[in-house]
Image (cartoon, rainbow, N blue to C red; front, side, top):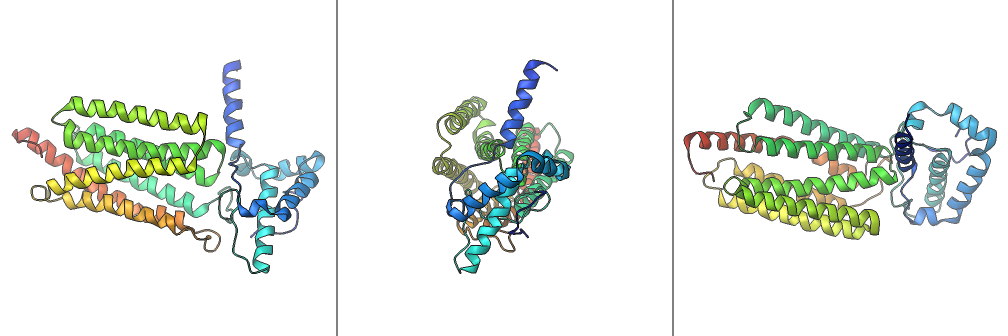
Length: 333
């Protein structure tokens, strides 16, 4: 765990410019004011630590002794000061019998190697691996001639990208990784709506799904532009994702209800969408991390791992059904 003692160890021009910009974004940590980082004891601790350890010979000593994986993930001397001082402040809160405060919009987590939120990072990685495993199973089971084959493959790649950035974000929370995590999560929800549109309308009326796809791309572009260039409003982002999530939920459930008597596997789809939206309620618990590792967000991510297996089981069943009906010339449900 953290110690209260201050640490002494604690080509072309265009390519160079882009590389510098990316490194700058990766090194910028997310800044949100919370009770913990407003405390004078925390702020004074950080100032004293930076003054004592992050200049001159002490800084060079820190950089030379810092593990390579910490340097590669953007941990700086100031970041280490903030981490150490966070635990100093937490210790004082506990000694006085006060509840654990948040720091910069997050609960205090015990860092493991370079992972800021070890449980959430591991859960995100496991979700990505489950998604990849089931995508490979889908590709090995469903012929490419199935009408939904390419759309489902694209959806899987969008999902894998989102889980990749979720893993990166929970490993190291920076200005860039936070935005990529948020934006890619929104992309998954929007593509799920498109997937539903193609399944319910696009197979009979391709022009309709194309128009809906264009509208969804415009909505995503507007959403990202607003959050990037106007205001990174967490309340707006949550409201927007909740709204499109409800559209996704209701559309899929309507399709399940309409096909409950004709498709024996309809329940898999219905259960998946209900589970995903029900499990999201775990986020409302928002408790301090148990053992400084496991919080409500990590529990939510862990709980979604089995959902991939059920969802792809539905996708495999439905894709094979569509392929067979197409071969027999039967009307698609």
